[in-house]
Length: 204
Image (cartoon, rainbow, N blue to C red):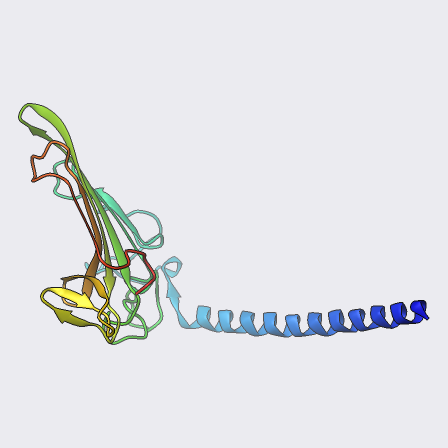
């Protein structure tokens, strides 16, 4: 009797695996079809058909100005004096493809403005300077996010609908959720730290 139960159990398991595999194949095919449709709809940098704000064709890798649009990065000189700025952003801030067929990289795709889009940007700035005869290193790191659709402004800060501090207002539609300054020499005012209620990216 145990052998019968075991045999039936094995049949059931085999049937389950067979059905599961069939369903998995169907799901995989559906996902692939959606992916193919998205690829057909959106124009990528690799196509050579997209242009930047100066009207120049966008290519892979870094531009002469320090932008790498495919990698969502900027790495270059900020003031032209040896200072350095590294920026990183997500698709909602500036995509690496064109899905609305305007010939440019998408910004806040699917939204009329950045508000509610989930866009974010980070800036990391560094500079060497001399203060009171000493060689000094100054750096600042900042996280900026697009605020949720139901956010509101009060006294220069963005808050959620349930009164949670998002961060300081910047550029109208955005909030500073974290700001760290390292200035050991104190030539630019000294070090400081600021953060909203949640400095994590992808939260807002």
